[in-house]
Amino acid sequence: MKKRKKTELDFEIDLLTNSIRNTISGDSFRTEVLRLTKADLKQITKKNGWNFNWKTELSDNSKEVYKLTITNNPNIVQGLISFTINTDHVYMDLLENAPFNLGRNKLYEGVAGNLIAYACKISFQHGFAGYVSFTAKTRLIEHYQKTLNAITFGGQLMIINTIAANILIDKYFKNV
Image (cartoon, rainbow, N blue to C red; front, side, top):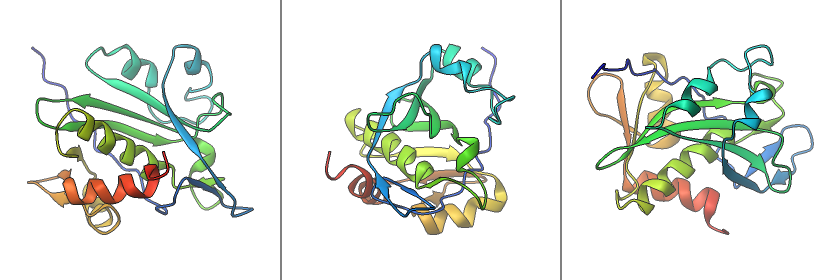
């Protein structure tokens, strides 16, 4: 079996919000996490500013791929996550904010935190006590330690444990 190279994740946690928040108006919007479909892929292309090949992620049967949308607006994708359910934890393969949610002029903040909280929720549902792991870019390890309470587990591998997972879930899913 060919061993895949782990992608180093480089998402930034801009703000942990109770949903996602519009950076212009300050309004918060409830979100839904839905399975990504082939039909969604028409808008998720490099030409439209996405960095990763989500078609490849979606076609990999070992991965689960989800989109974050604003409730009652499922056609506008705010961000994407791909993860693998392992025997004892969830491994985040990829996470990406929509191009309009990046940089200084982003439209919504809280997208990445929302998606990570969802991965933690899935971990609990599978009996893994909220444990989620991912491979971080070296320059962002300290950022993830501070914002997610993630811990390093050798090299660039990072883990979100039960306590940190509960904090994220309480932040994003307490009213669900």
